[in-house]
Length: 105
Length: 532
Image (cartoon, rainbow over all chains, first blue to last red; front, side, top):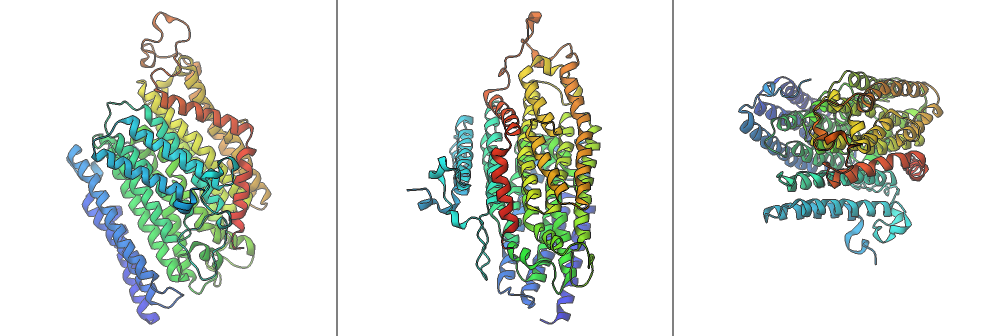
């Protein structure tokens, strides 16, 4: 892969990461928050794939295998998040993060 | 025959894994008696702790040693990039994690037996501890971050394990959002470092220094990793979640979050940031800056670490001064203690790393103990405000004395472990010369500041008159007959034994710190010089 192509791909993952972080910081609906987390996580996963294809060092297949592991991990994290939000919805009847105000700053 | 013949070098990890599987299996079979489930957790953590101590070279337990001495502190062969490596400092941290888990497991044996959820609590506690043990043997960045996630995911669920308490659920939700944000930042940083170096092996990264052909990748990679890990260690300005989470969690869980799981971030800092710090120390302060030439991280990086350490201590202490609730005050004091530990990695010399490790040991004892006392006092029916505790020390002298010892140790009063750890850490800062001396000065000033709010609690407990209708004394002072307290009464034996054990350890290790200081300093020396 040429350096030019890598720059383009890095631009893509930077954009995905920015969108994800922006979503995490601004969304108040828990489900949309989870989606934002996934978008930002995918930026990191894509980076591993690009860099493995780009000859910076003795990377071999490690970048691709890390990417596969991280896809599995991201699914685990979302499962736990959904479990928490289901329990919260059952007790409080809302999944809006801004309405969770039992604990005062 | 030793255990190594069938457990390999992973006896502590396998013990905890067996405990997790056994507890969840018994839960499915409707065996959820507290004595059984809690007993499994206590025995598993105690055996694992004994095995780790044996691996550190403690002769009387040699039967439990499973790691061949030659593979501890060994540099990986050139070209090999293993996922884990045994270092003596990692084993010390494993011991500290297991100590925290053991204390919390033992104290939780006196939860109300009618309360449900004991198998979930103990299973998740062991699972989180298993992840912590993996953090301590990680030698690969991705393995390290995944091990941290094992701990994080188990602790999100631990905060909400009652499933009914709205405060716990809200704390779990906040914890999850912040935790997921920190995870994303860490993995993004790791991916950039992978791009710059072509490897994720921590010891190869450390040896590579920061002189590479893509300095911007290294700079951004370390910056994102720092932000991600700083959330876990509750460094200012990444600390705001911690107070709500510690406040909203069940008391035993707060004790484990503050006393136990937070410390994985400290060891992760040692693993990830020692390389850049050593590179800066080796070159000295002249010649390059943040973006200078091909070097990504210059002295200004070290200065930034030091500034965050001072900021964390100060902000934590000032906010602790302003709190009215006991649990929130302890949470802020826990934040300020993280600042002391960051001093160690900022300096990066062996004595400083050793001092920070001793501070971690002190913090495990003091913070776990303090939150357990808060839980015990809440179980007696006393309210959450500091003013609700008035007169408690007069009415329950043993409990009051134990809590006073923990607070004095947190403040750094001589003859406690908290004094010994601060003394070692600040001496290392002074010995390192240069601007590091100011870190010691800032630490001392902050210790003085923290005395104010600890002393306020002591005054309320020992010198203020108790409230007229004191729930903690129901039945104990009928007729005003003498000092009322039954030492164990109302606490349950698990909590009473744990709190007494912690109080004794705080004083014993404060009087004879050399018992632990020697092994810790030698482990820190090996860790810093590994591969050099």
